[in-house]
Length: 192
Image (cartoon, rainbow, N blue to C red; front, top):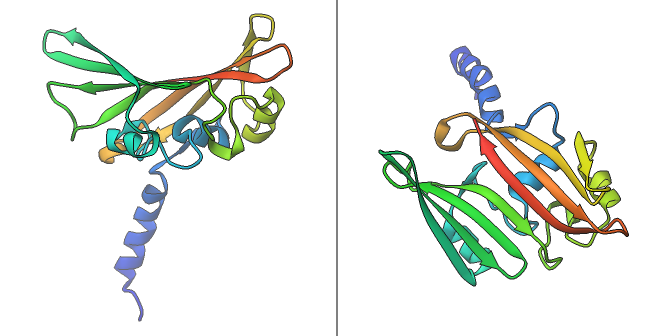
């Protein structure tokens, strides 16, 4: 079957847009992007970059041991609920707009992992060496502080949740002991 020229032209015009649904920016390797935004090895924490669906969290991680909720107002008309879910060796901070929630979306703000039982993307986990992280995630522009006990690096890209393109950014901070082993991973997120 031959496609009419108009169908071929339409495919050529739309194909690049379909490929741009999400991905790393020029400063971030694909593996570093996946590590920061998808995190776990056996499931994807963000089905769309930055967006979290609580039922997926509960399916893979179970019900949290406890949660803390805080209501905040950006202005008198904008209320946001920030919820921290605590698991053994894992904390996940999510937020949701209350007054005008976009399709019930909840966005990811912070993830902290301190237990090696959590299998992370690309075979990484707490307890691996900082060198293993660097070899796996590729070159990053990071900073060291506190006598080399902390390494932070930027991971960024873009996503299109709900068809709206936005910049997705993360700061990944690895705490390291005196043997060069990663003891804790903290990932903070923001978008524009």
